[in-house]
Image (cartoon, rainbow, N blue to C red; front, side, top):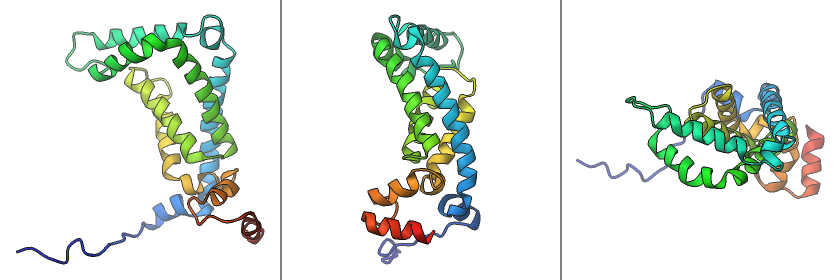
Length: 197
């Protein structure tokens, strides 16, 4: 027998107190600040080194990306049941990254700097963390460990806590101005809200 009432109404499941504290309360913003600054520093310093390197953004741009990609492709060709690099990702590396190594070299270097700046400044924190996690998981798919698992986990947490992760940063003013996650406010209303805090 079918229940005709199923799907005719919305059920809102409340967050548990820990999730509510971590992801919705500005009281948890200091936790996110520590994670954000650490992660931002890691991305910014890695990208800054690349921007100032001849093999990333100089005359030899693309050399490191070519070498890295060829190393990842070698891991995909191994005769083991579960290679470090899966076939679909090896295909992406071979047909997209390798022929465009110079472009990806610049993209990685400047992308890391922008992610780092976004996290350090707390500006569009969730978006910056998302692109940081995308870079980390790309390196993991290419068979590289290093600090990437930790960076991926922390970035994923920041994506989950995006509403309050930038509270001690520029998101405190940027998100209400853009209308996310709260109602869009004009500048006068924003000043009133900030003065109350």
